[in-house]
Each structure stands twice: as C-alpha cells, then as structure tokens.
Image (cartoon, rainbow, N blue to C red; front, side, top):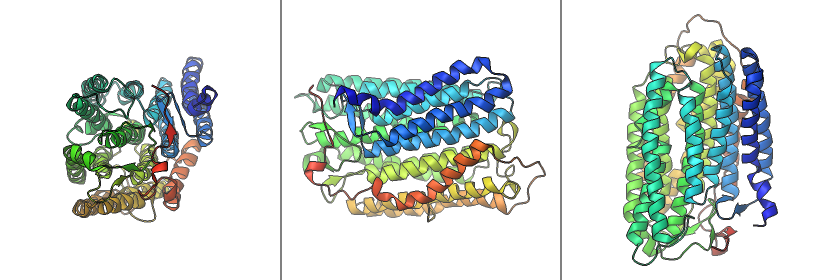
Length: 506
C-alpha cells in the first residue's frame, strides 16, 4: 500500500479520536446542563463524519498492522452506528440524572476508536494496544455511578478479570512471536516450535473469549452489565463484541491457513474464503472442538439463565452470552468440503450490534432516574406510555429472538445453514432448539411492555438525537435482511480471491 493511502484508510479512527479530544477540551467551559445538551451533538458530528469516511475507505493495509476489506468496513460501520445509539441513550440518562461531568461522551468515542482498531488489526501487538484502548475507556464507563454499590462491584470484577486476561493475551502474543519470529498474523512456526506456536495462539484466543463474554469466561458480564448505566450496557454488548469477534475471526482464519504448513502470502481479509487442508483439519481438530463446546455451553447457560431474570440488564447480559455462543459455532471447520468462510458470522454480528445498542438506548429512556425501573415490573405498560420506544424496542427484541423479517432471523439462518453445509447438522439442530427456547424471555419483555398494566408515571418523549438514532437502528434491523450479499457469500471462492491484499515485505 502506498503511504499516501494510509490517511484515508485510518480516517474514520482519526475522526473519532479527534471528536473525543474536542469533547474533552470543550467540557470544562460548559455549564452542567449545557454539557448534556451540546457534547453529545459534538461527538455525533464527528461520528457521522467518521461514518462518511468509512464509506469511502478503500481496501488496503497499514504495513500489515491494520487492514481494511469489505467485512471490516461493515463491522466498523456497525461500531459507528452503535456508538451513535449509545450517545443518544447517554444523553437522556445523564441529562435526566443531572450528571456533573461530560467525560462519558469522550470515553465512549475513545472506546469506539479502539474497537475499530481491534476490527482492523492484523498484528498481535497492534491488537493488544487497540484492545487496551477500548478496555480502559469501558472500565471508566462501567463505574460512572460511583455512589452505587452494584456499579463499584461490577467495575471491580471487570477490571480485575480484564487485567488477568490481558496478561494471558500478551503472554500468548509473546509465545507466538518466539515461535514464528513475527507479531503479524499468518506466519508458520519455525521448525521444532509448532507446539509453542499453537499454545501461544490458544492463549490469545482465551484472552479474546473473555472480551466477547463466552462461557466459562463470562462471569464478569452480569455484574458489569448491571453496574453500568443501561446505555453503556448496550454499548458494551455491541461495540466490544464486534471488536472481539473481528479480532478472533482474523486470528482463526490465519490459523486455519497456516496450519497446513504454508505462510499466508498476503494480508488475509475477513471476507476471504480460506482453503482448509487435510493437515489443518487434523491439527485444529481439538481447537475447533473446544470452540464448539464453549459455543454450545454459552448457548445453554446464557438462555436458561436469562429465562429467570427480572432485571433487563441482567437478562441482556445472559442473552449476550447466548449470542456469543451462536457466533462461536460459526468457527467450525468443515468436516465436508475444503473451504471456510465467516461471512454468515459477520452478517449476524452487524445486525446484533445495531439491535443491542438501539434496544438498550430505548430501555435507558424508559427506565427512569438511575435506571431504577429497568425491571420487567418497572417497564410494565411503558410501550403504551411511550409508543415510539415501545415499537422500536419490539423490533429489536424480535431481531434478538430471530423472528423474520429482521436481521437477527437471517443471521441465525446463515450460521445454522453454514453448520449444516460443513457437516455439523446435529449441532445446528440443537442450536435451533435453543434459539426457540431463548425467544421466551424476549417475549416476556414484549408482553410487559404492551399487555401488562403500567405504573402511573409521566411519559418522557424521545430526544432529537434519540429519535433519529433509534429509529434509524430499527429501520436498519429490518432493511439489513435485504443485503446479505454485502457480507455473506457461499465459501466457494476461487483461489485468486482467497488473499485479498498483498503483504508488505517482512
């Protein structure tokens, strides 16, 4: 890639970081009420500019550290859209609670920039820096309500476990470097160091499994999601999960490629169709079985735990564990055929992220001061009190449950049919059964919104930003079902398409 092309490729991230800095610089000069009136709009302007820049970003890479391709463009776009929804929810929450500072808006942009860099990463050290940029900002956002015990408890658990798993990730990166001599993905181990390489890759994967909240690394999720403001809960469930799965997908595709003993000859796009050799199937058999087992455990534990929750934040926390399980199943290596593509996963992830951020922003507006009414009883009848939030939230919940004509339905359909095509039809059937069971707790919330008698409290209409962002997210949740070809293709690409970008000379 020519150096003059670096700027447009990184422009969305640069604009997002600039927005965060402008928000930080403006915050001390505004009165308390003005902070929540102006800072979200300043942040939104920079995010919209980042979205426009993302549309015009062309495929390429930055010296093998960060890469851009079609799938990454969509994933970064989902991060930007989810962050806009989170800003709208934060504006309503912090303004209603008369929060003294405006730094949460800047922290949200910093976390979004880090998540975009995670999605673009093609190097273990670049990924670690992006991961920490996201994590440090999210830690502060989880602990915004310092006067509340559940907020402090959630922050403590998330921070301590995050530090441990960051160390595990970094140790895995060090072992991989020792085994290959490179920090960039896609290099074969030096002779005699294959076991060291595989162990290093396993540690990196474990570090990312923590970030996406998969079993058994999910224990932080319910407490952190409950301790954070509702809008931040949606932001975590959307943006952090997109960054984590994008990074995990990049590592897995490269690992599948090099397990046959041949280094990747270019920077591998997330939308690539990768040839799976017989050698790779043998060497990765245990790893893929572990991922599939963790995926199934996440689906079971997440769905059954969510069934008994009355707090919406805890329900969404366990729901996110279940959705992480569905997405992990997409990493299965085909037992029949010789090509692996993760296009169905990326479509699922984009639809899930937008629906999560939109849903939690709507719930944030209905949950009252300090989010005290984010329970099934607290939200009882609020769909009738505020029809806009009730209707949009119903759309998002339908997408979570996998009802047509939403993106969630098509996402599950693509992942399950992909499992069948790979020869894992029994896993697909089991996952479908669990999806039907999981729809029950979403229906409980819909019934509470519309059918149950509501508490008498004044209905608050949507803010201007909330109206446009949540409405756009609800529309996207439905419109995306007509655009599967943008992210998904059947894994039959010719060899010339398998490496989408040339690599720099080592």
